[in-house]
Amino acid sequence: PTIYAITPTYYRYVQKAELTRISQTLKLVPNVHWIVVEDAEEKTNLVRNLILESKLIVTHLNAKTPPFEKFKDKERWKKHRGVEQRNAALTWLRNNLHLNIDKGVVYFMDDDNTYNIKLFQEIRKVKKVGVWPVGLVGGLNVETPILDSATGKVKGYRSGWKPNRPFAIDMAGFAINLDLMLAKPNAMFSYTMEKGLQESEFLSYFTTKEELEPLADNCTKVYVWHTRTEKPNVNGVVEGFEV
Ligand code: UGA
Ligand code: MN
Image (cartoon, rainbow, N blue to C red):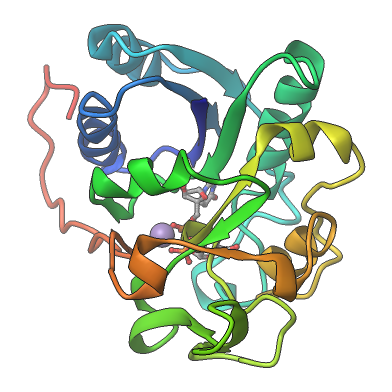
């Protein structure tokens, strides 16, 4: 199966650095199709050139977050990020790939997280929806599904926030089989979902807690970290460089 990695991205000083890191991680992974969705009115040359240089298989899209939804620093918690962009990628998948013919797994890969290439071996095992721990998120060292020791199935979550959500899992902690994604065309992200319930409500379209497939050695290994890059202090601009 092909891994369809969906990455929303937006312009800021660290964008090129983040995309360099992610693209070079993906270079180490066989059979990936990277779907890069710019939060912009038009595709930019910065992203276009980076994609060309990467020589990865890439679909380059753009979808701008409407201004009323664009988050402001102080309202970080109220606004959803990546909604417009992930939906554009889902629409592309549904318009260009074929149920029961194209085989793959879909993963939402933010541009600023850190990924161990072992994660992609796990993602390839997903039959319906696979889950695993995510490091450095939700105010915890790790958020993880909790497995029932008798059945090996997910019985709950260790999560920094609302562990009783049906799926208390960060965007980086699950992947969905392409057939399932294509079979449920109504499954989209939305601004009406309460902040923090985006993942949980989206997963509800596809599966139940009981059906989740625990991966990464029965959810004992951390192969992805919800890292965040500090905003750099740029006090001067040297002309002639695209950083
Ligand atoms: C957490 C989750 O891990 C994200 O998957 C989720 O989208 C986000 O919360 C949210 O809904 O608010 P967080 O680190 O807070 O992540 O969010 P960012 O990394 O800032 O943004 C997530 C993705 O959306 C990134 O790939 C980023 O480049 C992109 N983004 C962010 C945009 O495309 N436009 C923006 O204005 C902001
Ligand atoms: Mn992030």
